[in-house]
Image 1 (cartoon, rainbow, N blue to C red):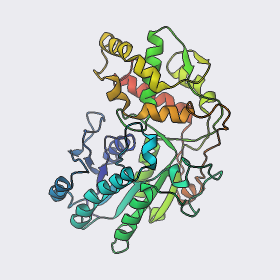
Image 2: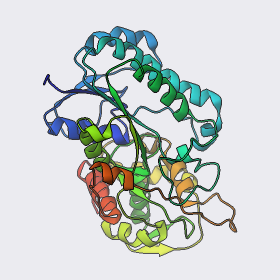
Image 3: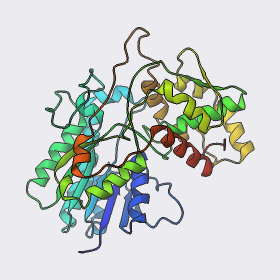
Length: 365
């Protein structure tokens, strides 16, 4: 078998960083495609291609680097400022399709030994952002009839797949948590920054959200393990899989464990917006960064759009009398196919918060 070379698009994102680390540790040659280099351990071997996927000319010019690619993990994503509103706007959908086409068309032409492509959707594939979904949502359900860039990307890849030898795996993770900063949807740094400011102010870790809302999480490292498995597994060829940690949680019930990981006391009160809170306390953050010798990361740069995502997940902007419907998916299909790894969600939160502290992104507890 020829050398296994994986190209990871969106390599600086929450999924991409874990994938770079995991594939490199497994001995694969890794090509990381992203505007920023992935923030991984210094001893991780990878080649970084600093491509903007909206620049079609640059993507075509980079095709000489794609010849040996055998596997692709496409985890690149475009989101608009403020996040949520963009999910319903056609230009956001078109931009995500353009990014995929700009990379994949020259790559497919150049990578004559391409064997497998993984791409990501999510619970928006079931319409979780527009209506209550079935409990649990299953991969065999008919395509939900709403506009979404997932369908544009999937149709593009399936059309290319129809006349090629490589296989396709579509992933639908639940809410993803990892170590990436400055991204659209990773609230671990949001919680870490909020906790640091509260500690600085002598306050407990007050839960900002509403009660209820049974949900599932998925660890970015677990996704990376699944990607590694799917790259070689016959059972993953041309399949769609939900993926979660394997348990369920509510934010309010998990909050004490999050506080404990940060060596803080949990507290509960009325819901409030972390977007507003963090904007009002940027000066406190800047001061503690200087005093504690943390990475010199301004708060907007640390958060990306993830504080907007936090407000959404915590339900702070929903009507007070609105029920928080459960958002649950079945992972039976993935387990029956042969991938059964899992992680306790409370342990996952502790792991990522500790890792951010180790990297001096947030203060040590």
